[in-house]
Length: 587
Picture 1 (tube, one colour):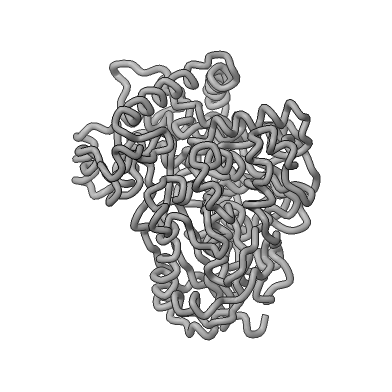
Picture 2 (cartoon, one colour):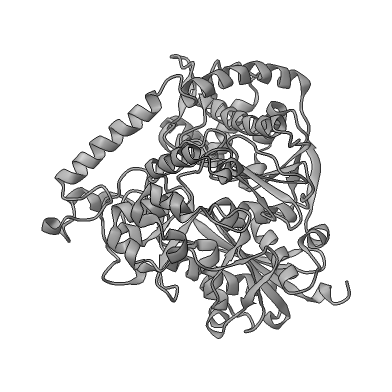
């Protein structure tokens, strides 16, 4: 390891609301400095931009690509200063991104939202991972795939998500043909930011496989795509063309322009892009089969390596080399976890609780957690469904919605809060059991992400799943994982597994199941399962009907105000904003 103690890497993690850069020592993964940059535009899910004020339809979630470049301009130089290292000693940079987050670009990679004549068209902006407005297109993709017996559909648990490349691309075609035709490349943000760093467009094997239906060297056929829409037949040829880069390999070297942004030396290695969840696996040194890594934040992504190929119902995908070369990489997930807790705190907590938290100098989340911690399992008399952002696995249906059952006039906020914590744990248990039933055993649950700091939540997860729960040592798992991949791309380690052993770490069995609590949770989980199947597997379609009712009402109101269902202004009202839009905040 001679020389590695004075060699450094930069990892950049692009999250939902901000980007974080970390400077890491190559010899042991020590994190020497970090910095965060909050996106100026945040998530645009109600209106296009604060300046534009154009209202967006339900289930949209957009971002600005300029925010991503600002992370390179601000967070990377700040992290270098915080670390106190000489930039000349940095050997490489790696990045990771939320997925599936899509950027429509011109031939040279310019985002369409940067073009003045298209900037007022919502479809030119980045579609964030939680843009769920393409559910009707996803439904048609799934139906046609099963009708035709497409072999790739089983690699995704039998269902393609509305969050992914093809559903969002089909929505673009059918809702704004002009923007679709102007799109030369339909680019994962993970690959777009690497393109900005090294000047070369390389599609990473992770997102291509999990989000782009790239299996065994090919995408879905033109015949299949034409069956969805005749004008969609050339989607792969016209919009997805690009080399596939393997994880841990170099995509290229840092350009002079990117070096000026970041303060890093021109010519250092730029690693192939990656996904925030998958890149975290080596940061936790959890690359072996059976170690399921749950990256818990606004949503949760469950990823795990396996020796063999299996078909797991409702999984997000299985891809050869999708996490680490040489293994089959499995993915599943929950669309809302931290977002669910955040929704409750922001919308359903009485002022007295907010005042108490303020007086004690703690967050409302911590106050509710403390109040809920002393309860016995089942004491609150509630069971909830954690689908406030739809269901990613195992039902793969973003038309589903949340539910809390058992409310009475004596129910307190901490009761509902604990029920929501438990509901997300039940959702993870459904995923674990689906893998085990398919012959892919889960022996250890490894948690990364901001939510691992909640010890009450972690114990609930261990009790509910009956698994030993390990926790990542790093507070910045994705960024560290990106730095680990940069170390491999720079030639400092032979492969990701070797780099993970040296630079990654976890606290093994930080939480273990309490048998009494686990038995009580078995009974409560049975009730969750009954509701899960009743509302999620066709027993009662009320959630879908309510979503459609809301869409119809909002779309009708938008039409009456001069806005079509894609959020574009009609010609006779172009440039006019409703008076109440100025009062809305872009989140």
